[in-house]
Image (cartoon, rainbow, N blue to C red; front, side):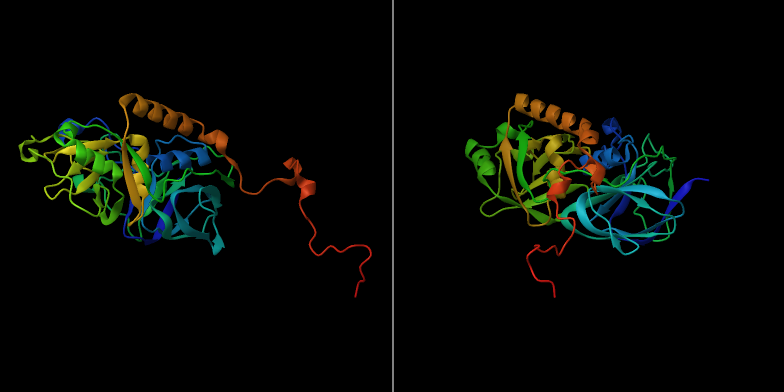
Amino acid sequence: MSAHLTILRAGPGLTVQDMGRPGYLDMGLSRGGAVDRLALAEGAALLGQPDSLAAVEMAGMGGEFQADQDLRIALTGARMRAQIDGATAVWNASHLLPAGARLSIGPAVAGSYGYLSVGGGVQGDPVLGACSAHLTAGIGALLKAGDRLAIGPDAGGATGMTFDPDDRFSGGEIRIVASFQTDLFAPDVLERLQATAFRRDARANRMGVRLESDGPGFHVSGGRSVLSETIVPGDIQVTGDGTPFVLMAECQTTGGYPRIGTVLPCDLPKVAQAPAGADLRFRFVSLDEAVAAERAAAQARAALPRALRPLIRDPRSMSDLLSYQLISGAIAREEDVL
């Protein structure tokens, strides 16, 4: 009998997501999939399974879940308060969710998008080769209370593993490369773009992230003459009032706003995970530097399984065991005992 995960309570932005549907731009469908693809890879590493399997993406807050069979789970992405039957569940770690136990996931305390991965992956009827919801294209839907998610067969493995995630949950520097319309912007505008501390607007979703800043907008001469052409996640479009928007996983496939630059794919999770109000700064890099950064990011993802460690250290494998005070309240031999 296949396992199921029942949603008892759902936050406002729960969807099933995988790595998306590449290759359909010519049909008007953007890739979609998880906005933080690294979080899916982290969950897969914790569970020892392919990162192509679908998980539950939680925007801003989670919900309450119950399994009808023992399940292995992993919690990654934006850190959220989590409990299993009232006991705290560590984030960026794998756990056993016993049959009948309740997994409660609250609001994000760092970042914007959290992920619940399950041993065996969330199953569904594939559409164009993927199970992920693409809400703007009308594929799939938001998850709601009462939904039962089918779980695939789990090959099994360890739980109680964790790792140290990279810091992508508080904004910071975002590397970009020149786009097709970058040269339309005056040199002083491009310099000001890199010198500006942008703030992630609260108006952000799976389609795009609006950026706020002090001072004038980032206007371009001849912007109205730009023809509508193919756009992809990571492109930074500048609207008529000079406001930059970073396009995300469910962006449209064509657009006519000038693009001042494009975010490196390996830095896009940092944009997605930045909470409202977080500072973001852009820096242009060369194509060679961008390729090197992407190669390093791919190597880091491949090394994730080797970066895992047990949540609770086994005393039998602790070479520094004697350095710990294993008995509290110890006293010196000379002291009086009352």
